Image 1 (spheres, one colour):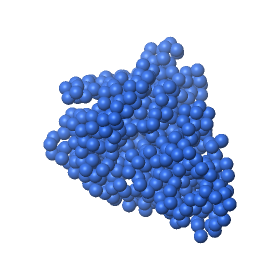
Image 2: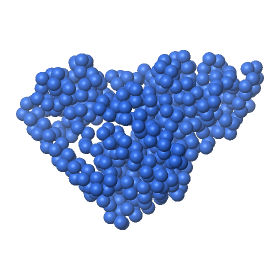
Image 3: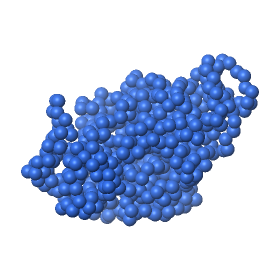
Image 4: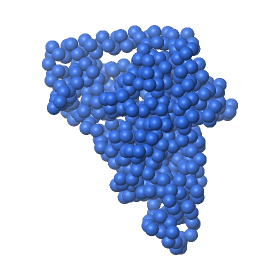
Length: 565
């Protein structure tokens, strides 16, 4: 007696092999049987007639940030509804566990600067990965979570709040980082993530990262890196990743691989070749990407909110911003602070660059607000979509990009959305089609979409539609990939990289993480203007044998768990 039998589906097993017509039986948490007989008659509590549908392994999202949000969003509705059953977390050097108690407040502030919802206002009640795992599993999680230890958090834990100004750790601080990392690996972490573009990791030289990766390699873990530069120093950054893997033996991944800004388009021709040549030398390196033409997306108000004060009880942060930006005297003071802060940050970054250059590391300039963000949604100025704020200033005949940002925000009454980039479509397709690339979201779990006019809103269509977009636009419509190859990049390839032997393919005895979808209709409905739209074409999602999504609607199933290496 099976719990569920999915009958007469087009089975794509995740290996890249051609599909076959078959049926799959689920018992308890496992794939119990696979049949190729179209006249199958078995007993099951539920039989799903799947003729015309594709059955694949559940999606393994190699790069996500749900440790920021899973305690408040245990249903992970945006993720499971696009077919994700497992997500790698603790990415870009940030994790919400594996930190020292004495510097917990500094860690909280560091992580909340990236994700304001992480931790909440109070200090976390845990420190170790094991304690965090217990807290999550007591609350429940709709998806499986694969934890990494974040390097930025290790550095902050060892060096305290001064760690982003101090360029080099003391020997004792280096030892402390290694102790915390080793503790995390002993408690089941899958490896280390670095965020060499972010505080505090941006101060680390190659040798520091390699020492930590050597610890990870002792446990058979992996290194996934938001590299130092995805812009002017993309090639040296990929070279650094390869050097670290070559010197330590650790498996490495250039995560959300891309070339940002038009002047850098085409660079992935070189970086993909570098990965190929490294593998020919025996270096185990891969990359992942998300299929979107812009990186992180936020409300434009995020640029101003630190300079206008927080809303009190009953007050609206949007109204505070509109009032202060609309007043000429207030705006002059805000702009002076914006300009001064940018100048100070540039001066500090120059010292960082000079320090790292002496060690052979190419450190990038800071992201410049004049060109880093482009308008992706403006209700009152749709003609500005796709332009950065230097271009907007010229178009509107304003003094500079700060005045352009203010003008657009006021005219949109706080509803402007901006995103980083752009990223070239040719590059995106080139990376996606390459056999060494996996697919990831760079997204966090959400049960209730954020209010997009909130100045701290952080929403990107990758969080709601990454995998349906690949299967709809890049498989069915543009034929950049075959369906079997796309599924491989979403399932068995990330499973192999992470060392997940119990899921990622359809095989008897493995965990029943499964995705059933209509290949003719599956597609993302999320856009940069409406980033929180659910996809179409998803029939069912199973996590550890239990139904998490049925006919596109999420169930209140929390059958996921925090996995161990």
